[in-house]
Each structure stands twice: as structure tokens, then as C-alpha cells.
Image (cartoon, rainbow, N blue to C red; front, side):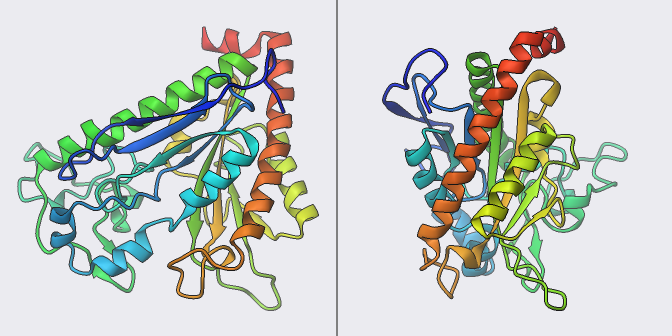
Length: 319
């Protein structure tokens, strides 16, 4: 699928941000063509594997953190899909253990900090994600317990926000805006992996969960198209449960302005080996399903963009 005016140029890779304690390693990488081939960016916020030694030494059980916190090799899926479709790709290299890019900067458990703020009420009411142990800086995991040997400091948090979180979301915002300006609409596919979901009775294994924040994050036609694709591919997909979408969708989705977003969770057993540590025998087939999904959604987003341009919808909404 070529651009609305001309074919896409060669892609370029841009490295942005920085990882404290890991000199020379960028916090994330953006890969895109100078002229986008399709109006989609695939973002992978939880695949970062650049662990500074100082961070690793502070973890109680680094092995569990790697296998449980990471969306293990979801970036490798994205790389194959983007190479086949021409979608832009934004991949975090900073690990989720350092800072979670799918959390608001206020979603903090201040009991993790040696110098927690003393202002009245600050930190007294935790957000749902921080209460679960998975706030802006993850604190604990079910079955694992506390992740850290000791407390963090506000200075560390501020540095991670400034060098990783803020530039990542600024880059994503600009990338989506550029795609929308070119195509009339843009879609963010926020890619994640999930542990196998429990089955009930004779229920088939759910391979994908499509999250659109219960209709708030994208046009319904995109969700319908996604489910039609999964059905034709013989894949079982669920809608919004148990993953409806997190902070990334809350921040960047604005369908009335031509900015659509879907969070896509993929069962790790679909593409990893039995130990869930390396790409497995299902990797190629999973890539094929995702390539078909992106190609189908690209046509749908381009159609919405043409409709919006004719109606002047998103330009009026932006004003």
C-alpha cells in the first residue's frame, strides 16, 4: 500500500532519550519511512532489555523480573511486521523495571521511596495500578513479592521521567500527528504480550485481546475489522477483558481528531518456546497473522482519513 501522494522512501532509524546508568544506550528507537507507507505506528513500550548493572544489583530476583515484567520479544514481532507492511515502529529499550511507559507519571507508590514527599495527602491515595504493585516504577509481582532490595529516591524518579518517559511520549505524539497530517487519520497499535489466560469449560485458548478502552480509543470500524481478520485467520480473540488499554491509550487516543489507538495483547505461548524465553515454533505464524491484521487496518484507517478530510472533521475538532 503506497502513500496517498507517492511511494514511501527508505526507512530511517532514530535513537532518542537515554537510560540512566547505561551510557550510550538510547531509551527508545523510532523507525519510519520519510514518506509513510501506511497510517499506522506500532509501539512496544514493555520490551526493553537494556538493564544497567546498577539496576540489576538492586533487584531481589532479576530472573523473575525479566520473564514476568517484560513483553518478551514483542519487539521482534513488531520488527517483522513493520518490515512487511511499512508501518512505523517505536520500541522502548529502557526496561519496564526502570520505568513503565504505560503508566501516568502520578501513578506512584511513594512507600517505595526513602524521601517520600511530605506534602499533605500526596501519595496517600494510590491509583489502581500502583496499588497492584505495578505503578510507574513496579514494586512487586504476584507469586514473587517485593522486587527491590531497598528504596528508591525522588532524584532517580525525576531522572527517569525526564530521560525516558517524557521523550518517549513526545515522540509518539509527534509521530501520530505526522501520520494524521499525511493520511487524514492515524492508528497506534500498542503491542503487548500476556501470560496464557485461564480457560473455562471447553473454551478455546484466547490468543489475542483487543483493547479500545470500551470504545473510547478508536472508531468501532477498526475493532470490527480486527475481529473479522482474527476470525478469518482462525485465531481466537477477546475484547477489552481482561486488558482494555492503559495510559498510552488514555493519553494518545483522540478519535474525534483522527487519532485512533488499539492495545493488542498476544498470548506469549503463541510465539515463544515452552520456557517463554526465546522465539518458538509459533513465531512465524504469529507474524503472519499480525501482518494481515496491520494491512487490513491500514486500509480501514486510510478510508476513515479520507472521510474525515472530506468532512473537515478532525481539523475542526483540533481547533
